[in-house]
Amino acid sequence: MSRNITEQKGYFGEFGGSFIPEDLQKVMNILEENFELYKNDPEFLEEYNYYLKEYVGRENPLTFAENITEEAGGAKIYLKREDLNHTGAHKINNVLGQILLAKRMGAKRIIAETGAGQHGVATATVCAMFKMECIIYMGKLDTERQSLNVFRMELLGAKVVSVDAGQGRLKDAVDAALHDLVENYQNTFYLLGSAVGPHPFPTMVKHFQSIISEESKRQIIEKEGKLPTAVVACAGGGSNAIGSFAHYIDEHDVRLIGVEPAEAPTLSEGVPAVIHGFKCLTLVDEDGNPKPTYSISAGLDYPGIGPEHSYLKVSGRAEYVTVTGDEALEAFQLLSKLEGILPALESAHAIFYAVKLAKELTPDDIIIVNLSGRGDKDVEQVFQLLNK
Ligand SMILES: *Cc1c(COP(=O)(O)O)cnc(C)c1O
Image (cartoon, rainbow, N blue to C red; front, top):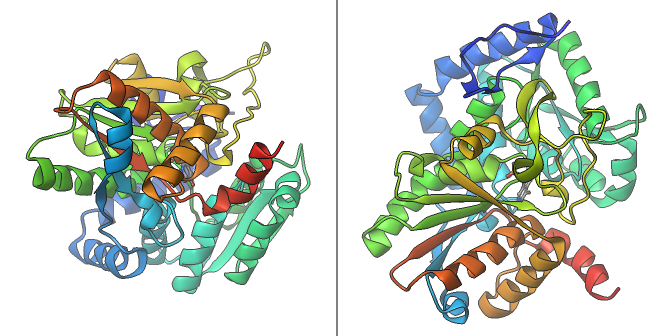
């Protein structure tokens, strides 16, 4: 009983849209109306900017990475420091925007799904701050593998619901959260973690993550008096990448480069398909079902990708490349040793490619890499990988 009611709205070329049952579409329509109503509302913006500054710690720096620039011996490399945000990654930009919207819509309960736990922790954080009831759906298998993140969410006051159905993975958690939403939409807000899902989520998440490139554009012009040659970001669902690209999309001389894990090369090998209520390039198995993926960085482990990235890829505006887990591990150590910055394993994929690209360019060129998060969460895993 899936159908597409939104027509051109929420489409990026053939991608995006909203392929969901009618009762869920009703909830999405209400969400879209409210997002349109509040996104440019002066009071909403004032509150969003207040918390970005006082709670998240923005604006964060655009740091010149002197030592890896020297090591690469080509283009200048700058790091956009999303790792310095409260909670250690870019995800807080989006959850903050969405919870402020939820508050205005009169929601009392926030629900979210999480795989590895990063989005769940970010959501539980803002729920604590804004005194909202918080329910996080998580596959049973994931709760067992990420028991420390479950505890972290509980410390923040969230209730973590372990989902036993299906394979006990992210997809099953999404299904449980959607079921809750349809039952309880009158007082419940579904807070989605990446630039994916049915319209209006990809557009809304991009809107809140665009602060990354709004700042970096101003900062690079202040520091260098010109725009970068390239902007490089890792892409799982694609929220930090689309936020890093947003203000450069119309600057046609700026190369936009998304870096995917070689183990989940959605844009390189995916085909157009509907997944989780929207159309995007998707990795599928022989039967046409979304294919399970196995990246070393949980945050990049998704068989689909945001619809706008799918469009930027087929239209040729952005380039998408792949980096292996071993290469990311190498970049993790390189940035730690040379710059004194431990990157998230996700971000390390982008670092690896940026260093490689820098070598092919000249000292007149500038590369901005989005350092989407800090690596503290990955230290134990890196320890185990390196000692194997
Ligand atoms: C979640 C996460 C990602 C991947 O999500 P996107 O939506 O693709 O940005 C990347 N880096 C870090 C640090 C993350 O926590």
